[in-house]
Length: 596
Ligand code: FEO
Ligand code: CA
Ligand code: CA
Ligand code: CA
Image (tube, rainbow, N blue to C red; front, side, top):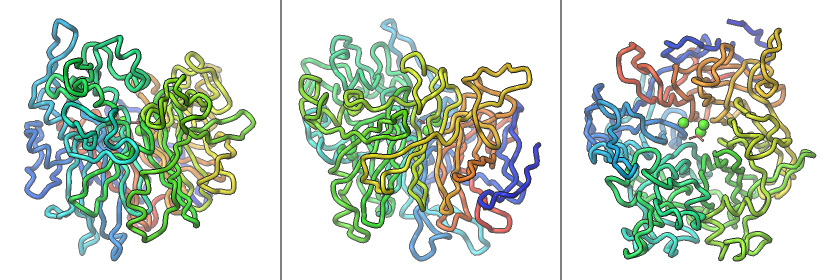
């Protein structure tokens, strides 16, 4: 391994080496640090939950009380009196793996090309989606513990009742046979990244919801933009799990003779930001429809001294957009009544990145050119329901799969990870912000709002780094795979966040089966200096895993990061035990700031 001289004042650790072995099954961090599995799929959440069974024989009722699968975005909410020793950890459970069941997922093919599922498996899969909220604290010996009997401990799943809030509450497009009011939806799914508000609530985001629905009526599908533009399944089964064979609300085929055409509107009730108050165990989560409907990766909140607030989101699909939502009213610290529903009114914008390094936020406002009835937008409700189509119409820039957005804590400079786009150059031409054809390695782009004002509609941008390989002496690496990283190599940036000192942490989600190279290796977490652009590899995760989700105590002396879908046997790392998605805790042996 290459030993780097420690000269950067922000990056005070020695890089770890890329891990290329097909049997690598642990987590490595720099010397002087310790990484400990802290919270894994199946761990007890609710008081009285049974212990996880390594043969995956836990029932769906057990699963409702235990941690879900595929830990992704998360956030630590401190208690005010001991912020660095006591808090609530909220963790997304994005989707489920076949390892959820003793012998994998069972599908039975039908003659009409749809698939049947066992009800017990579907119920367990629904229970393993959503969020976990757990109380954690450091004990007298300084060890972090999960508080087993906490009143705050909670699971939110694909069946938890939630309120539809904002402009679409009760709208005809939100009404279904099961919910004629259009005011209450069951559950949240595919919660990838997230946000945390200045008033200490959690924003879970619904990313690839389209894979959970099917509309088998081709004529209807082709005229229904809320299905077609979002890529809901068109024939056979929904793509992921065929839940509709057990729960009809996932079958969005219009039922002509049924109230509200059955469940044709159910997909309209997903793709939102879901606000949850972790400090109120009885809080009913709210889907904030003013913020628009996307394949939403994240909801990064930024607020300035005047209370000007923006919520930034990537829509992670090829050629989709970067968005920000500006609440109509400023945020006011401590004004609980005002902040409670701040996200229920405001304006959604999509970004245009121009070749000259300038950019503009384009409002998705009904009535503007392109956002009129002739273009399929009857009113502002239609704009919010088909925000993707509205962003197409106003000329936003199609991006290489926007994932997380990170805000520099002092300068409010914004960074977005564009994870990769193997279709770039085919469906969308290359441009200044997305410069490589068949972009397998991705890039990180950053921008500065005019006047550092979150409410600005103009900005300046540049490419922070192109991820990828270095040219070899024999010149064998294709130009579109060569990056410009100053430091350790990586591919497919996804998770990304700043720590309080302004270190940029980058987490990767490369497909190692197709784009694996020896100097990149397994997925990893790196740390970047935004000024010098130096990037150092801090952590490598087990083979098969994505590294995603990052949060800290306010003093940045405890860091949590997620190992999602490890491939072998992590966290047991014995080569035998069923692998489990796991929240890993990182501490420095001398108790210092992580990365410093
Ligand atoms: Fe679930 Fe875009 O990552
Ligand atoms: Ca992601
Ligand atoms: Ca990803
Ligand atoms: Ca993932």
